[in-house]
Length: 167
Image 1: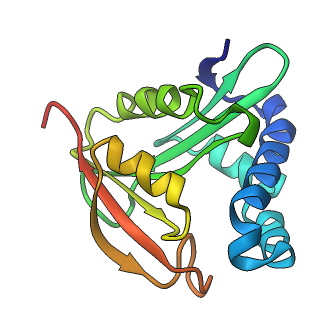
Image 2: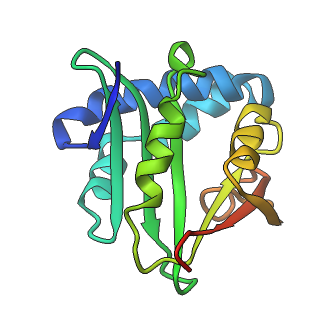
């Protein structure tokens, strides 16, 4: 049984390991293991994760069963788009998928931003499981980008949006 809680600095090594495992399982087929390793080393370095953990207008959650981290989520208020929260990361360890962990993390994140009217995210079109998950949770396609995650990444993504309840 996993429970969702706020991440702490002592979780970051396990979160980084989870992200590596999940990214290789999800993206090696699309981009090759070398490209995935390069992105993981940059985007999920301990320095990058610590910076996310320290951000004030953000929420960094983990699903914990007292032994392992089964999933993680990270969202932050957009600095460019008013009243919009960006869901930057929602990953569940492959062996833990389809057990409600992603749903539970997502449900918690949805409640963490009372000033947000819209939740927005970018998802790789080839990640069929994630696309289906977000559709099932009320997201619709709002656009596309050729540079998911950061400028010049060269990774295409669908942009999904969802109005948040209460607005």
